[in-house]
Image (cartoon, rainbow, N blue to C red; front, side):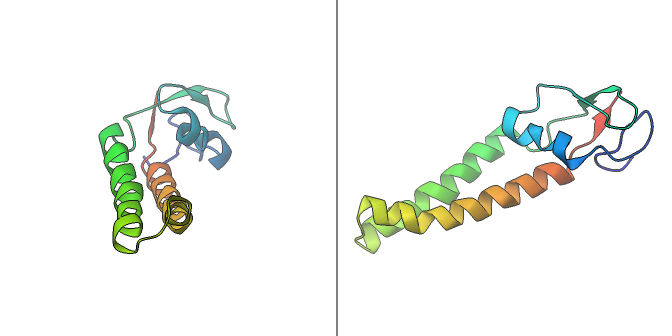
Length: 104
């Protein structure tokens, strides 16, 4: 079975319905936009511990670098780390969407 494929009608579930897993989490079900059946995830696409570790490494470490080694202020450090965080969030979203598999 392909990713984001409905196990009932074997058509792709819309991206809009799958994006709610990034916002709400994986505890909830969704419905197929073609056949209307209720779908549950087969497994969690990205383990929670990996998300926490990635958040730490992507935001905290560059922030400390800009604060202590570049001697910037807090606001300047946050502004320099913000593009890094946006790119990291986009990468995590793509990974989650590529690993979504539904079960009956």
